[in-house]
Image (cartoon, rainbow, N blue to C red; front, side, top):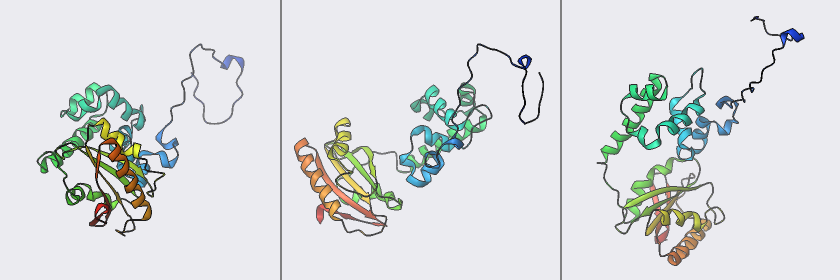
Length: 247
């Protein structure tokens, strides 16, 4: 084998080696992605809720290794170990060995899930019940920090226990963006009998817009047809909220 420096060379027939092996396909790396598709930049621009599980894992891992790009590693980890199983693995050594990843990466994964468990335990790990606008605001008040309008739904069972939370849309709220189907489909899937929807106003203005009122009216009408109550629609800004139901 000859070693040559960088440059342009003319090869003779003797320099060419014929092979029946396929040329490896090009692997798209994070650095080759458009900036708006890179996981870290996507998180900064749109918030963590807009990232897929594999993208969140890639952000957590930070960088890949010489033999494996970070997005490929993230996808492989989740596929091979399973999203549910990996949450409960507390031994980095087992994770490192079974997934063939550096021990430092395994420690990052284990530490992140342990941190989540401890924060969850601070609230007692108890079920959350939302019976009024104030309780819904306490659950959703972190939305106030979003730089763009986020429209979310809280789905409640017959005891007003939260059974699901869904990010429905991102962007200025209009009847064209928020369709009743997108709001009530998760309710059907999770057996909810009531829904609280909420969105933030990055401007800090709590007053509902005409579009806010129109969306609320459409959702209320659709809910009555489906037998799923629209309990309220909150506008969240700063440390305060306004109930459109009470407007």
